[in-house]
Amino acid sequence: MNSIEIIPIHGIPEVERGSDVAALVLRALADEQIDLQPGDILVVTHKIVSKAEGRFIDAQDETAYRAAVKAEARAIIRRRGDLIITQTRHGFICANAGVDRSNVTDGRAVLLPIDPDRSAHSIRMKIKQATSLDVPVVISDTFGRPWRRGQTDVAIGVSGIASIDDHKGRADANGRIMEATEIAIVDEVAAAADLAMGKSAQIPAAIVRGVDWTPGLGRATDLVRPADEDLFR
Amino acid sequence: MNSIEIIPIHGIPEVERGSDVAALVLRALADEQIDLQPGDILVVTHKIVSKAEGRFIDAQDETAYRAAVKAEARAIIRRRGDLIITQTRHGFICANAGVDRSNVTDGRAVLLPIDPDRSAHSIRMKIKQATSLDVPVVISDTFGRPWRRGQTDVAIGVSGIASIDDHKGRADANGRIMEATEIAIVDEVAAAADLAMGKSAQIPAAIVRGVDWTPGLGRATDLVRPADEDLFR
Image (cartoon, rainbow over all chains, first blue to last red; front, side, top):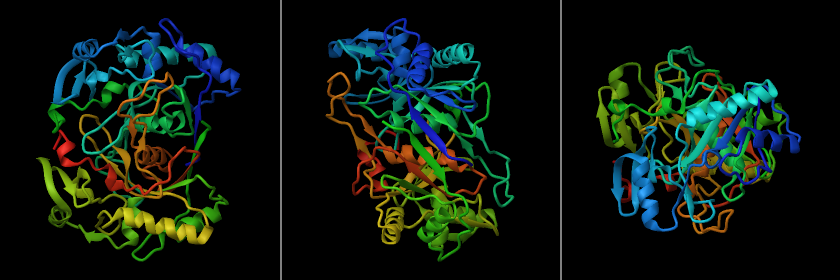
């Protein structure tokens, strides 16, 4: 294994409805004189993708915000006081159906993209067209989790990379066949990228370089554990 | 933000009971001509820490393995067929109480360290003594999680770094006070390090360089969500 590098992409301007995320990323990379390389993975926070897709709502007051959460949720998994753990239409289980009021101006809130895997695919295809490089794209969001305090970034949209790195049946260093090691590599990539983006730094994208990944028709929705395998719904 | 680098540490020999993990890491770094730098974080997989501490059991047969899981678990959270989700004595909720049969020879299995935060502290102090650098140490393990398929590496032992990067009350890029953004930075660091270690590559440690982290009396057990705040036990 070689070193991995996580390169924050500075200089992406405020994204609005209709912005071309791929073009903004490529322009920012050019301005910073960063060349995309074969093997690179592009991580983009969902927020700029959602904004570009016009996935805003007015959430000036609490009632509008709560209505948006309700509209975005397919199901409510748990509820305690103000905390609502929901399942989104994509299948993700997260707080407030992913409706997010931070880093948005004018009392608006940002919803998740309608189909984040498709959004990732579209960004990937545009970059491929512009650069001839087929760079996998991971769209990230910040989720809490049960049992452990704090949040981490995870993948909610994926294109061009297998979401899970399956070690099942592969021999470990002692020749023993490994049991049930399936690494959610795109979640680790999203978490790693978050380290380079910082929360209040307005860096909505990063290049992750040097990861040993497998090309594939990965989708972030592959990461949703089917209800009948899930012991915690 | 600047780039982050994740440097796998090659050349750490097989660890046995009584091995000095800090010394092995420093020797491997010297052999590879990698200089530790201020700001670096050292990530070590729990397996070599447990081995050095003699936390082996004989798990030749299934009965011995199951007995070990039972002995290591403080509580059983869920059970379905062969899958046992447990809470360990440290408070971590994971499969099989962290008892691990992969990458171990002779039918043995590895238990979690008795006190992984203390193990991390001990490694950190030895490195400080040898190099005069105060490098935070994160001990990692591979955990599954509810709702999402696949596993990711998380921190089970921490020393010298605040486990959670608390953005609560800090203004976001639009001056809005952010609500409840607490990033489990040591979990993101563990996940990032795993990308450079690979599963069957026998690289049990990595340097994570360039992260904007906060020194602190962090403990991995800080990441255990108290039962009364947890909606999923």
